[in-house]
Image (cartoon, rainbow, N blue to C red; front, side, top):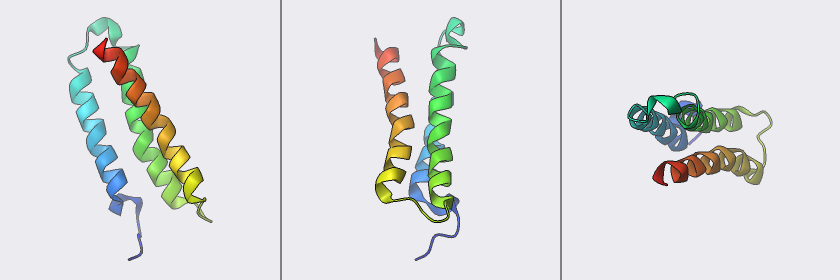
Length: 87
């Protein structure tokens, strides 16, 4: 099966669900974190599906390692922000 659009990718769909969850969760953060941790978590979550779409749309496609690295970086950043919230 050939993927015609990044929107068909399960990774992109799950990343979009993550954005929604992050926005809902960060609504409860203290107002003084609006331009700090809240903004960082939201930006990191938004970059994940953006990178999925970018990787899928490359012509010629990148190697799978490069694509995975492109996707992994924002995931790691987002995970670090989650650790900050837990502390």
